[in-house]
Image (tube, rainbow over all chains, first blue to last red; front, side, top):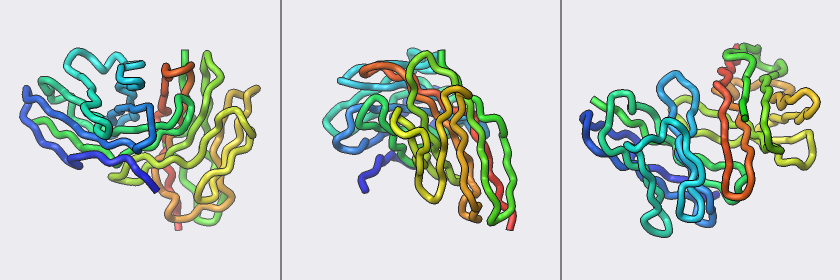
Length: 113
Length: 115
């Protein structure tokens, strides 16, 4: 069964550095999402992406964050200048339709030092 | 506006007994509803979905959920708990139109299964 893959599985970065989290969605999916889960807390929606543009973003997704689909297969989340509070598990998801289930990757654990 | 409330943060059952994880929602749209499971240090796996077809939805691993519009509920059940069911469960509501979708996660319910 096709799956969403995320790399790296764990990223350790110094505060203030830029980080790029990578995702390869399921190949025929058109809707792409990023979520984060701070340790012990709920899963929080960050952003959804459709037709090469952001369709929805949360209050968390401020100017430090950006997403890109640089080619036909990758979907990336960039954090420009990381803060300690960005430490979390980041999940990528993709879906075949707007009301269809989202398929999640195993996540990237981001640790900011 | 859209919200999801998982009424129990922790549920503990004995192996072989029924499981009930409760979820209530509100949405301005005709929402789709999902249950996901997360095992420790793993991603989120879809258990089942409701997308305006049959109100009783069967999922994987013997789980099912019933969409009750009058009660705005989507509770997850399983007749007989297995040790491997111990995990965190998230109720999710998705509503909107076209490419615009608002997705809201519940706060999660940790299921403990006692041998």
